[in-house]
Length: 481
Image (tube, rainbow, N blue to C red; front, top):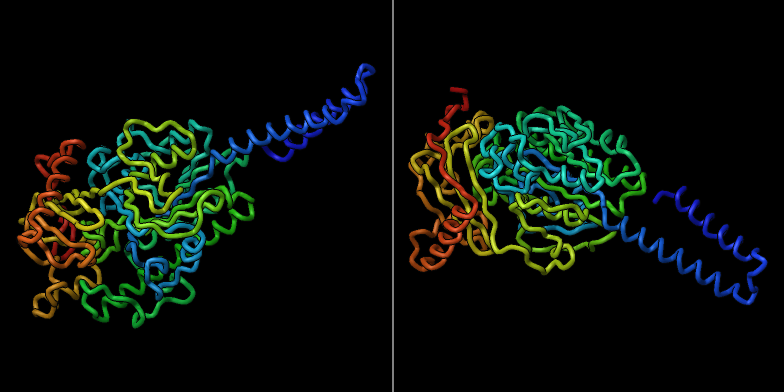
């Protein structure tokens, strides 16, 4: 109910009270009883309206394009300039164990919006359009009275009617975020999918007023600490900071519009950074996502280690909006976690890697203790995506590899053939460097993770495509074949 409607209701209530008092048969001794009666009706009415309004929060998903889970302040990177993401975390809840269903751009986005694993969406490989028959949670929100809009990177195929408005945007992808928020109909709750192109390659210098200094960046140990790597990472940092500035503008506008308190905001990414051993990989560097939720009306600030999958967003939003939850959704609502940060809604997450420039079929199971990976095509090396192959970082790595200058942890992309199975103790080996498949001390753990994988394959109807999509780029040069 808007302010005008409230004023009209109050006027009519007291007008009715006035008429009753003026009635000749009205006994003045009943005045207090009558006033109390009308006050009670008013309180009851506004209570019901308040409950209805609070049951339909607004939703915004800020989704970065190729950003690592730990490349922002709340997850430990104090070098990168993300003041608005930092503030979001300070005012909301930070999820330390949130994961994507794949580390590949369009399949990840299709998966999130449908609440389904990539192979179940009909668009499991890069650039595949999402089939028209697939259900988007945005459509379910529409049915519940929501206005829905997408601004920035689309990348799911043909325009969908589940979005009332679709805006583009380049080079950042964030240029039309504000239009999407300001142009919304004010009488409806809303869902905005605000999708950046930052920090996707290719990079350009001076994307922010004060660029990051290469000497200050944090180089992951699986990358060589070379000048080319540092320059590459500094430009990547710049684009995340550019995204952060747009995010800050939206948060300011929410307060200006007076809808800040009842808007649930999520910041996340679609896959890992576009560097070797990150994007398209099944390690945490590929499928782990930053996941920050802010909703002042309902949740307190804090941190949780609850496992969450990106396909859990769909049922969660539908539950909070009191919309129907389609049976097609394969995710699990994490509403219990928002109410109690020690709550648990799942025991494990599952990720997959299908064709992305190169032939592939990998599956991963991750829980709080272990990461298990199964590779159907171990004969191939784990080359990064074609744009990352062409990068300063990887071309320098190739030179260092041929000269024998890379250490053991930096050789991963060049191993050929690879092993068919991998098992990692994520507590004691957070970067997943030591494969424990052959370690007899972990035989029971390996068998347990294998069993989880086997069960998921059957339940989700996962298969290996025949024939598999072949390589369409050279694994060493990144050039199109």
